[in-house]
Length: 239
Image 1 (tube, rainbow, N blue to C red):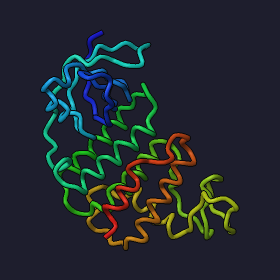
Image 2: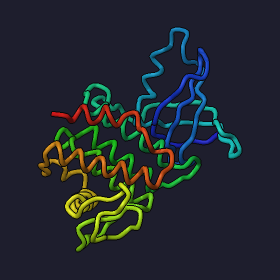
Image 3: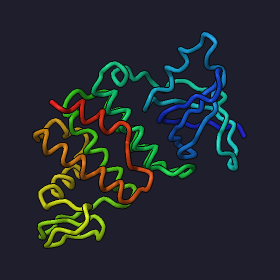
Image 4: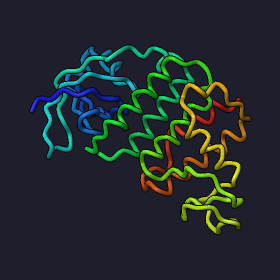
């Protein structure tokens, strides 16, 4: 069945000398793998359309039982210049695309989730302020979509990620945060992307918040460990 759907590029892998498999989050079919022919043989410039978080209008030969769909046609929805030209935004795009690839189940279509991710991409393309907080805001919000983001303040000094509530003594495991860290995470959860420029946290606290969020994802998602882009992102925001 030939079907049209908008899609967000996550990454691609080489399939043959003249073809690639592009992993996308599609509006209509959720996360999908698309086989793209005609790459190579002097046409390497075609790869430019498949950069992390690029938005595509696609026509695919969709078959529900197939693990890989065939891409018939594609075009950019709009150019996203800063995502490829600015180092900070490129690192964020790589990180966000890897997070989506690890968190969203294949063939699980969610129009609200797609709309959220698309909005986040457009904000990242347009804004030049508060970028050191973009991934923190994004992670808290997508964790809420996944159903495991704590969203209530506590009186206890610690929050146990495993138990899902505040505790008065440090847990024996590593999956917990102190009350102050939880308060910041909830602050990011409730803040729109447009408020990022108003945050002013030092590098040490930002790293602590990021590590806490990655820890939360690792607890709930078996394949989330060892994000390749995690170290790159920390290096970009090391100053």
